[in-house]
Image 1 (cartoon, helix red, strand yellow):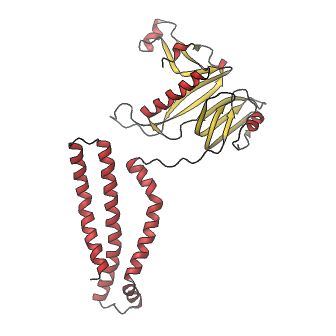
Image 2 (image 1 turned 90 degrees about the horizontal axis):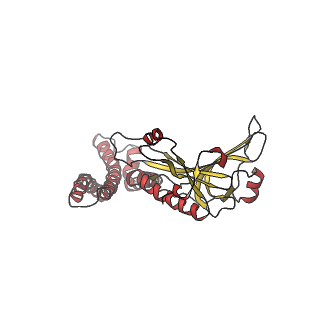
Image 3 (image 1 turned 180 degrees about the vertical axis):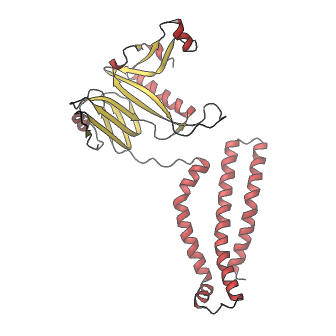
Length: 307
């Protein structure tokens, strides 16, 4: 047997055994006190590495076994078999190169699924400056983001929807939402002034605890910029009972400044699993902007965001 097939056979056997050994080592690490999530990620990475070694080794071995079996049944002189036998090492390397190129393309996605590797978001395409009451022409003039032309609807209103990475800024506000992912804007009927805005402000999906930290930072920035938090007040004891004993609702969710009402909204992006721990899942945060008078029963006071 040639040297390369010998090395491939050894690598295949060792890597196959190590796949199972990695599982045992991962369990031992957890038992010794290592964080289960960390141990799980390291175990999956090690198993993936040895799986690649095993797979690449088997490719070369299959080529070698093919040549050997063809020779044993008397086909050694066949042109195709002779060609493969004479260039066995080169053909093996060619297959490795082809498979390696495909692996490099797929590896980031595999690592994302296995260990939660975050894919690069990409650079911002510009700043979108928009607010309730602004005209589309004013938005285009003040923004550096190249927007698609909003669609003219049958009732004379305009609808603009686009998914790309950009920074969002509310007219003259100092608060900026970097690496926002989409915008949705709507104008009034027969008008070009914005009456509704929806902005996806999370760069990527987040677990619930991270999302709450992200939102709290933005709430603090809004407060510092002169925005006032709002909430609903219970008007009866029956309402208090329905609100589980609370006399307010929506604290920290509603914010107003001038004629603009900003509403924080969350959306779960993965499926809920039966029996999962509280706070599980991946979420995005987006803001819904409306005229302030759209929610006339909101009461704005500092206590609406207990901080």
